[in-house]
Every structure is written in C-alpha cells, then in structure tokens.
Amino acid sequence: MPHGHAIKQTRSFKTYQSLVETGFKLLEELDLDQIQVSQIASEAGYSVGAFYARFESKNQFFEALIHYHLEKRSKDLSELYKNTTIHDIPEVLVKNITTYYTQHRRFWRAVQIQNNRDELFAKRFRANFAARRKMLVDYLEEKLNRSLSKKENDQVAFSLQVLLGTVNNAAFNESGPIQLNQKNFLDEMKRAFILISSFYKFIEEYNLTSKAN
Image (tube, rainbow, N blue to C red; front, top):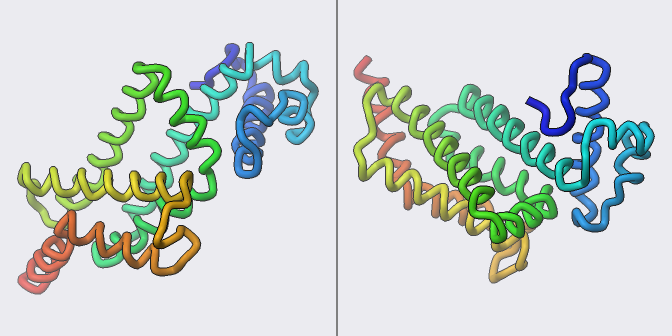
C-alpha cells in the first residue's frame, strides 16, 4: 500500500514508484536533509507539483522510503533463502547484509535518528527484525525437517543481532580495526555468525540427514 495520497490509477502509481526509487537512490550519495523536493522531482523526470500530488510533505515521503525499504529487503531475503544452499548461507547472508547497509548507510542513519525520537517507529523495526529472524529459522527448519529448540532460536537471533549491529557501527563510525572495505571484514563476520549461531552444527546435521536419505 503506497504511503502518500491515495493512488487510484496505474499511471499515477508509476509516478509514485519512480519518485520513491529516485529518493532512495539519491540517499546513496546525500543525507536526507540535503535532498530537496525539487531535486527528487527533477531526477525522476517529474514536476514538483507531481511530487506534492502524491506526498503531503518530505516526512510523508520518508515514510514511503521506509515502506519501500521494508518490502525490498523482505523480497530480497526471500529470494536469497530460496536460491542458496545451507552450506552457502553464512557467506551469502553476511555479504548481502553488509553490502546493502553499506550502500544505503545514509538512509539507515536517517532511520536510526527517527528510531531514537519515536518509540512507535522503533517498534516497527523491531517487528521487522523479528520477521527476518523467522525467515532464517523457517529456512533452517525446512532444511533440517524439524523445529529448532529455544536455545537454537536464541543463537540464530543473536547472530543476526551481532551481524547487523557490527555492520551499522562499522558503516557509520568507521570503527576499527577492520573496515568494511577490507575483505577480511566479511571473513571475520562470517566466522562470528557461524560461531554464534552454531551454524556448523546445522550444516553437519543436514549433511548426515541427506546421506541417510
């Protein structure tokens, strides 16, 4: 559902989507407060009037960007789990998350600022994190053909929490000693993810089950 004025026509929705995608793209290079409505409209190939026909304000536009982000990440991760073997999940997932949040660190910085101001806003992202954790748990349960224990659930959840927290810190604060642009950042994050989640046990169990069948 679009976040803005009611969109009733296919053509109008295409304009809406183009404005949102353009704003998201601009956030790769500029902070949110540096981006002007006129710039969004111009880059998308529309007038400022077309923007305000769909969004009451820049704040409402930011809500649309958040909605776009949540839908995109859900779709991307769904495809990732669908097309990745259990053996490759640690490497592929770590690389996907690291690359995405590095590329969109300005958008994510704006989200973090809003999170600190608005508890309801923060709750939405906590719920989204829970949904993404469930995606990984569901993936593992399907591959292993069993339910994960509470301990296993907690380990998977904490491994994702550490991964996202470390990527955020490295992207925003450029904290060391290993930087995001260094290859061993991905290597070390993969190692940490495997150790915390005990993912090697899931792979081992999957291999044994596959051989038995």
